[in-house]
Image (cartoon, rainbow, N blue to C red):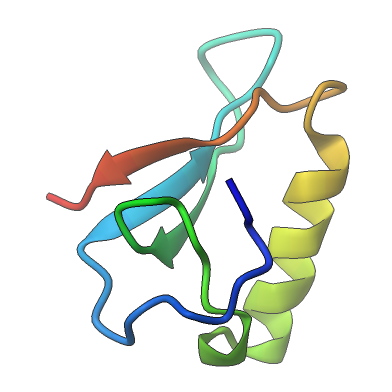
Length: 72
């Protein structure tokens, strides 16, 4: 899964979710993506981009590997 691809559509129907690694409660990060999990970095605000990169850095430590989930 190439998470840095800028090819995701602008109206995403999926989310890439990063869940806490050690408990069910706590912070969960979610970002719009396509069905393959590609997040459009150009479509994120500066703040969202910082949160996305932060979440990626915490995978394996504080967060689980991201999952692609259909938006409700």
